[in-house]
Length: 274
Image 1 (cartoon, rainbow, N blue to C red):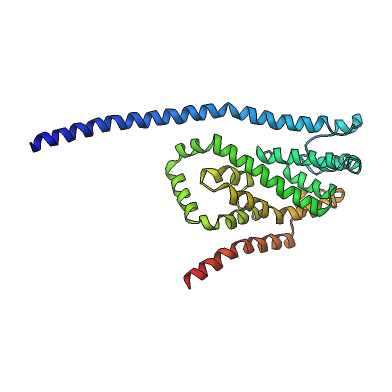
Image 2 (cartoon, rainbow, N blue to C red; image 1 turned 135 degrees about the horizontal axis):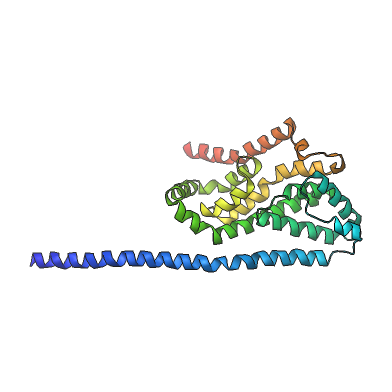
């Protein structure tokens, strides 16, 4: 009787062992198919952003042929100066059109990790009053970073996890262990140049960083360095390169805000230990 029961259990286990690989393989095929379907959405999202930019461009106030020919994304300080002079001509009579154009381009650059947002930050300081410029830069940076976060979550997360499962699992556990302080860590990373902003945007969803602390950490964290670039934008015509923003005073300012961002973590841990 016992031997029959043992054979019966062994037979059931063998059947289960045969089914498990089939389920695992089926799940992997399902995930692969889902990822493939998502990839068709990416061009539509990109086309949507391009359509918005085109709409802003077409509804922009009437411009002279020479001004329209020089209207391009700034890649250096000289480009930023030229664009600043052109937009300043139309800003007084068409303030909200110029503001909307800067917002649309800024969010697009941040969403797809396209270089050039630094020059738009400087340009914002040149075109707008400081309160408007700093709110514009912080909001656009956070909104664009959130879009990049979602794109990474939809189209890159599963690929990276399958490629480096052990490493990702380890870092996900580290993030989970510090979940109560993620807002402070995101602020710290945004203030300091330890990691490029595009890498933070792409890696955060992979490591299970929630969107809320990611968004607000970005909104608050980009403020100190943006303050420096906006202030520099006031004297855009005298600037020769972006490196003039950096001096010992600016380094001290960023270090101060970086330390401030981590102080709540220190005091919470100290209070728990007592």
